[in-house]
Length: 306
Image (cartoon, rainbow, N blue to C red; front, side, top):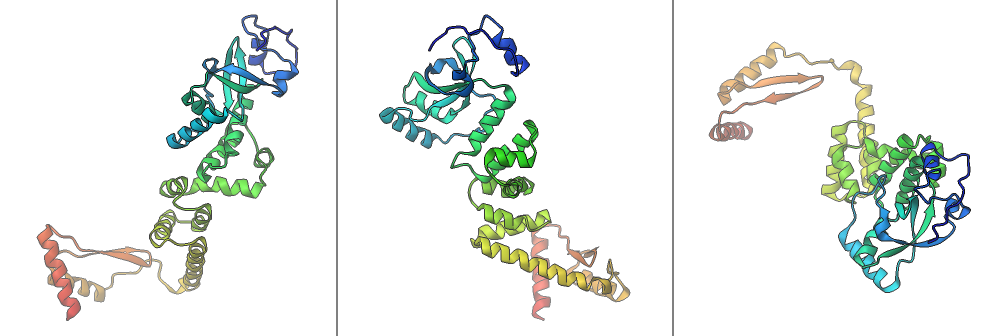
């Protein structure tokens, strides 16, 4: 690769990059070759450092080995993309998986497109390249979208243009990050589909979201099945809300109810406690030991049979 120094041009480059271009200790050029990444160059792998903005943190070992075997036979078909940092010094923009597999295959040089980019452009390119991978799970896509919005100061419309998606699609991915962690992990591990996740998002309460997710797993529900459950739950809530005016906000433990509780206390020989919660509540029956629990359960069974 040529090391001829070109006279640096003044203009719209970032301040940090301009300083590099004016530094005689580097050989960064602003030729059209580098600006557009128009040529493929063979670069020593030892001269390439990792991308500090790499959004991908996990690389499946088996897939790397398979790609490595392919590279041994066919070579690296798709060049990586790097930015030039100085004399024989490059930083990976995209292609870390290909680079790792090439090292496993024993390659010492890589075909690469060389570009000039500031840190924000580099982050944006790395994230977009990551999003365009075919095997990315929905949570990885969502996190990349979030980083593009926050760290590259993009609006959702601009983000949609960058990644070739409409705003509603971008919004749907970002909403996935509102799901409980348990559900996000399942989505990341492909235990449920994005369709299932969207159905779960149709439920507002976090506990209900988790309950629906566990039911989806347990019953192996289809997306349509999960959606039907959400529709039914909303319909039931609507019916309940219509009759709320006739129900007390918190029910009262009146004398008649107290008598029944006292009778249950004597029967079970323990202090039964009633805890109202709005129109609902809990009956708490304490026990002192495993044997005491068995005694109480036996007593309750006898009452049921009677």
